[in-house]
Length: 181
Image 1 (cartoon, one colour):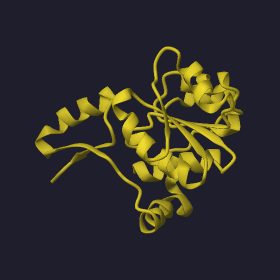
Image 2 (tube, one colour):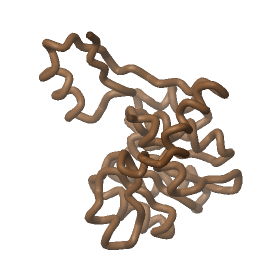
Image 3 (cartoon, rainbow, N blue to C red):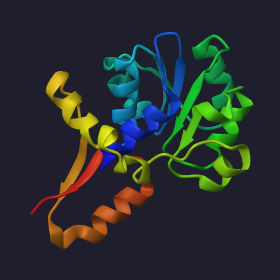
Image 4 (cartoon, rainbow, N blue to C red):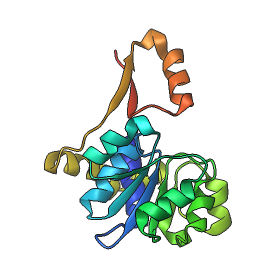
């Protein structure tokens, strides 16, 4: 599911070699795949994540930027003042941040803030958009071609499902939380 959601988000903003793309939640389950997919398309990628995740982002050719107060200024500095597309996997004001950075609504995609997206006319491609054959097949094609890294934050046995959901709700994991049979 994370792979198809990441593919749908990247397809929505259509990054290319001349583009600078920002991804919020860049070290999370969807974001960690979205940054790799955008890099595969040749884009310069800025990943918003907490500092403990910066080394992983750098290893994948992503310019890490710490989220929090002053994020807009840090993005402008990292991007040289130009941001062409924004993939939001977190919500919490990132659509407004993309607009503040001058990104056209057609090149902003969010999977978490449909209200803000509707207000400006931005797409909200995520799991629902993944229903197309192209998007559903893309993770398999990528896995065969380049083997993107799918970070696993932690695994839990089924009886610890509540603990797994609490970790997911904290939103500061690097990668996916997996329930193992």
